[in-house]
Image (cartoon, rainbow, N blue to C red; front, side, top):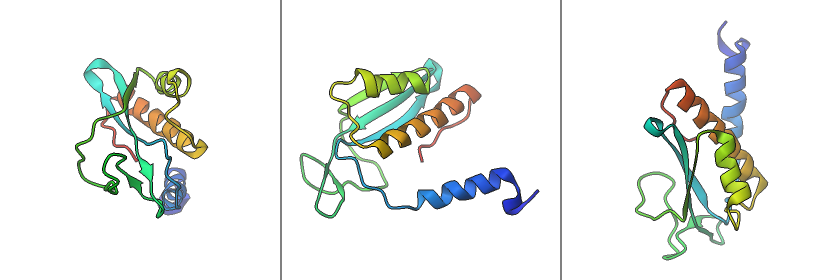
Length: 130
């Protein structure tokens, strides 16, 4: 099968379209998710931010907008680790006080990404956060 008659291609097209929708950034901050395969861990670094009047995420210390791409030299507010997506979610949503997530769409995104990271870890594949 080719094109959109292939179920995988059809589902990918839906996800690609949804990835282009506008999103409101979480004022509590953002996460960088990565794997530590040798230790069998999924990691999620949490970084604080403030949202300015234009809806841009800014560094809370400088007030400057955070670039969407490229490397930043910032310290994480917290690092959450676990062997499964569920374990990391428990750390973030049930054990962290206060919870570093304030929006349901951000929570749903994290759940999806952590499951993707877990699948990559189990399969021995590289993981790249969406």
